[in-house]
Image 1 (cartoon, rainbow, N blue to C red):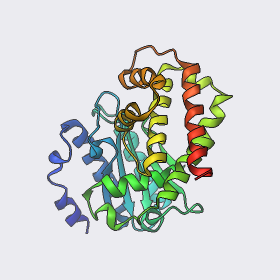
Image 2 (cartoon, rainbow, N blue to C red; image 1 turned 30 degrees about the vertical axis):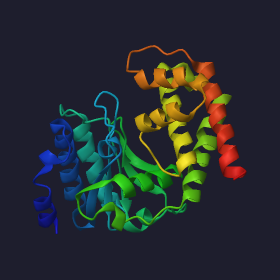
Image 3 (cartoon, rainbow, N blue to C red; image 1 turned 90 degrees about the vertical axis):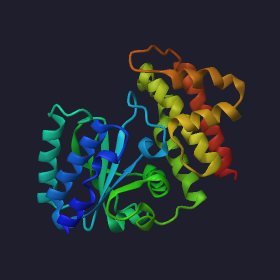
Length: 271
């Protein structure tokens, strides 16, 4: 089985248009196969690289490793060692890569008692994380736009997700994470987080309207086309923001969060 999987991935240079991203993904694949052995089912690329909105200056690389059974403690140690070596290597994209290791039964549909899975985080750290209701949205994105690098196609692994579940998942994120930030707003002092918040509100608005997931740029362009003109300068500023640039719009960002929460109530609670 392992030999066949390696044979399938020989053309890794064509996975994406970015050779350095491909090299990092290949190393992650090899480490995963070596650690998991017969527990390895496949590896899927998703996120902006498959939706067509990848920006090498600000995007992460998102992957999913599918396993037959939950990762064992021994396999977890092997993966942790491999990813520590990757993080401290000189290989470009050794960080800003995010991926989870989810077994087949937990991937099929969202199951609240079964949400803790190993994850490689974008800062290079590795551990077991809770995969909350945001993974309803992630599953939709992986099912619709994910691309199998090795193994089964995503649509064969994930059940269809209803529009109602999509909107409720978006509402859960807004109310669980963003609503408390209106009072405890220290994160919004940071320019990068202001831009992130605005783009995330655009994504939430898009999902509430369409029951689908879009990349941040796509959702922001949609918001520009349908929202009241008062929000347009803020959205445009967030779209143009890059590391090192200033952004001092905290109160306006909070107003935009409130607007999105109000829209959420109108769509989800009032129907």
